[in-house]
Every structure is written in C-alpha cells, then in structure tokens.
Image (cartoon, rainbow, N blue to C red; front, side, top):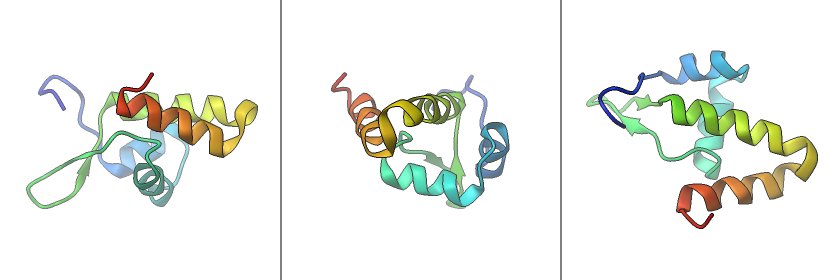
Length: 81
C-alpha cells in the first residue's frame, strides 16, 4: 500500500460499502479482496483499491453469481486478467 493511499480500518471499509466487518474479513480470506496490509499490532489495513474491489464484486455478483464473481476477482488479483 502506498504512503499516499488512504488507510482504512476494517470497520471503515465495512461502513463504506455497507457490509459487516466479518464479511470484509471473509471476502479477504476468500480472495475477493487483495491481501490487506497489517499494522505493527497485526490489525488489517485496507485502501481504496480494496473498496473498489468490493464494489466491483458486488456489481458482478447479481449477474454472474457468487462463485463466478469470486473467480473473476481472484484472477484479477493474481494478474491473470
């Protein structure tokens, strides 16, 4: 995460996209989000790209379903697309 990118706590990201904090953690674990940075204390730190990824996933999900949307997001984060 670059120094200029806005740093978001899990709760900040969850509120920004209308999810629970547990859902944000689950989406990271599932590969829907790129890996989050960590603070020295081990807390997750997200940025605008994580917010954009969640919004993209939520836009894909109604048309393609959760499984396909997850595969698309994983491919994007792996650089396969």
